[in-house]
Image (cartoon, rainbow, N blue to C red):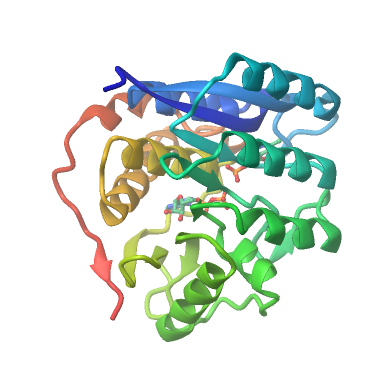
Length: 290
Ligand SMILES: Nc1ncnc2c1ncn2[C@@H]1O[C@H](COP(=O)(O)OP(=O)(O)O)[C@@H](O)[C@H]1O
Ligand SMILES: Cc1ncc(COP(=O)(O)O)c(C=O)c1O
């Protein structure tokens, strides 16, 4: 038995604003998981709400960096990738999965590409095409609703039936991953709610966790959510319990910040709620999608 599980986290480092690695490392460390970052870029801040940030692309250093790990014979319980800035970075992650992925570890790809029906400015059709190639190699993917629509080439609409969402989940799983989790799915019956839905191909089960939508957009919540999913699954939780923990934790993070009127671009007040991750799950609210 290993004393702690180990994750290779392939993400950018943004110095200010609580996103990507500055969120992923504290969450997974608090959950008792060792994080080994593969930095894809270094920014002075994240890009959501700050102007004139500095940006250093680290693509050129990623191959030597990961080759050293390969020579050291390092092993990981999970490979977890997020925002990728170019087709070449997608290729590097793909090779990393070939080199370090195996039957026993978990590969989680968060196909960060857009939000609210739109692609981020750095994304293109070429990137979508290559992201589709990358998700083939993943065990689990965690697109938001916008990213799921782009991966499937479907229309983004705010009114979508549950039966249609199940179809989306199945089609995404047909593209390769064993488990598909879609975040920020609008609730057609209750506009005040937001849903996370998932499909577990091996058990042929569909799950849903709902929560109240808090009218604020804090960057970094997607990274925080997927980190809790990764930590929870590595601790041995089931998929719906991991989803429950992710949703409950993000809600606590947003409520902690929202109550202070905290500036959204600075991210959620993670430091005030991190310890929640060590509390047992008292109430679980997941539902089975029939
Ligand atoms: N304003 C919000 N109110 C309630 N829950 C939220 C809010 N923002 C994010 N979440 C929770 O965090 C999850 C992941 O956030 P999301 O915004 O979908 O990530 P991404 O950054 O990948 O788009 C959502 O499915 C939801 O459960
Ligand atoms: C460079 C960078 N990485 C990560 C993130 C976090 O993205 P998310 O809100 O999807 O967690 C952002 C958000 O603005 C970003 O600019």
